[in-house]
Amino acid sequence: MSRVIAVVNQKGGVGKTTSTINLGIGLAQAGRKVLLIDGDPQGSLTDCLGFPEPDGMDTTLSNVMLNVMNEADMPLSFGILHHEERVEVLPANIELSGIEVTLVNTMCRELVLKNYIDRIKEAYDYILIDCMPSLGLLTINALAAADEVIIPVQASKPSVRGLQQLIRTIGKVRKQVNPHLKIKGILPNMVDARTTYARGVVDLLKSGYGEQLKIYESIPRSVRMEETSAEGKSIYKHEPGGKTAEAYHRLVGEVLIDE
Ligand code: ADP
Ligand code: MG
Image 1 (cartoon, rainbow, N blue to C red):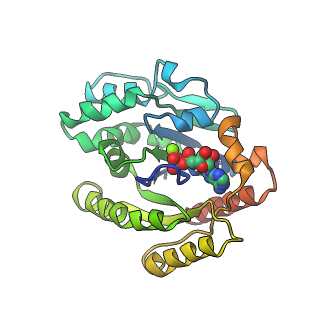
Image 2: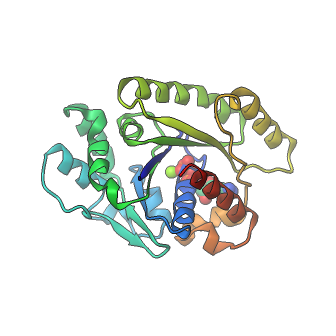
């Protein structure tokens, strides 16, 4: 049984991309077959994994979604790249913003990505979708295709406030297009455990949402983590045994528990 997990937050800079990468590579290290889908026209997942110049790529998620909309045939591996840390990657680039516009006038516009994922699902244990920072149609497509949602949240009060709108949107998608969709948990990210402010924000999350949702153990803020974006590799390779690698290991463990 494969699981599709969307990593979502309409705020940028909260750690969606880094969490998708490090959760995905961690699951691959645990022997699972993993596909990472870059769902952001900025192509940051593609970029952070070290693929050169996403905007110069010929085949990306945009072509895949266009093929689905046009009912054109494509091989199952169409557009999928291999990363040396044993994950497969469906890249994205700026062309994806055009797809968001095209989707508006498409039949079953919320279900284009789901249609694609249903075809390739069997080949993977986990498909992780790194969403863009908005609640537009591309993100709705990711939520419609997903079984589970993980919400990275930066340890700041405005970030926590934005959560309500996100949870409401997820509720709407559940009601209207994807009754199976579950919020797996909230992942507090970039938490500086030395500051009372950051600890206070995590407490706020727990008191506000802890009863309905799982609050994962926090990912610490670390300079080494910041560097991985430019290195094209995971935190496990960049700083093995470090606090952040350990924190992602624990997250991987939490996800594996539900198998
Ligand atoms: P999003 O995808 O939500 O926009 P990113 O994953 O791209 O967020 O992260 C935003 C920035 O924060 C990136 O520069 C990334 O390197 C940095 N970052 C992510 N996680 C951490 C962390 N735990 N500690 C320090 N910096 C981090
Ligand atoms: Mg991102």
